[in-house]
Length: 281
Length: 126
View 1 (cartoon, helix red, strand yellow):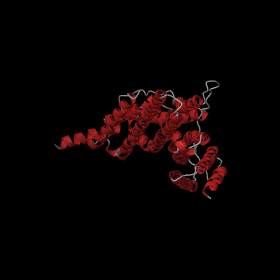
View 2 (view 1 turned 90 degrees about the horizontal axis):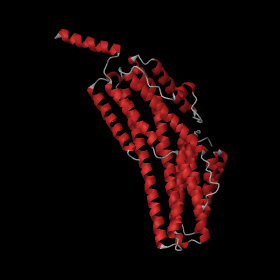
View 3 (view 1 turned 120 degrees about the vertical axis):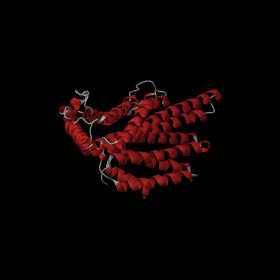
């Protein structure tokens, strides 16, 4: 019995030292987090699309189809920032997946690795704190790329990455669930303001007024669908945040069943949320 | 007045949106009593406020400024005052004047010129 215990102890210690511990649940959490965050690409609306739609409604209400340019530069910039933040968070999770999965021998570097390395983020301007988070995460991801064969890095990777990762996820959630959603709320009110007078106009036929009312409700429902989509995406971001906090808290007990179970549940929720968002369109 | 953070700009946008909605509700509720000129003016003001508000959400996403807790508190007072005003308003002209002042404040906020913001807030609160 003593020999068996010694054998088991030695085997598990050696596994830890050699990095052969089965961290499939961490890999799975990373994979599902990536899939969940990647639904960012499926979101129906962006700052720029809302700006263009608002601008078009303005032209329509002015009965104008001539010189219909829309000034949306600020919104293009807002989208650039949001995309840059999103990219950094997904890259970080790719790094986490790689350090937790011994079967990955080659890291799939994303297109923006170069941007992360050079600091060339396109037309974006971040405040000092965000830049710090961004560059901290970037160097960490790059370190993971280069030291990919070293599986013992997971503890350092998660500890070092936690704060900037959480900060960037917060910023991503803030821009989408708060600011982009706010723009949709404004758009909803703009549509009501536009249709109100048409529906009230007694010079129009009842049929025309009814049609305008129908158009209004249809457009309102579409905007609300987009808002639900953003809310769900925000929930997914928060799940990823919580999952990562759980990971950080239990770095010394990663192989325990309870931790495996909790991370597994988070991964399931993320997979479900990602499926729902993908089916929105 | 110190500068505004991104989260504070967003909070300002939320508050201005509430005021804008109140103006819209006021127009819809009193539509039958309004002259065509009054209705057009209120509709224009409503549209202008909506345009400013959506721009503020975009600014919040791209701009991050310093703290301005004092001004945020004042904006909250203005929001409450506006909601109260529109719920008990008999005089259309008072409504138009108030909405014009709020529009001035929203324009000042969009300019991110802290002195203009402070001046416009002062003119509303005093």
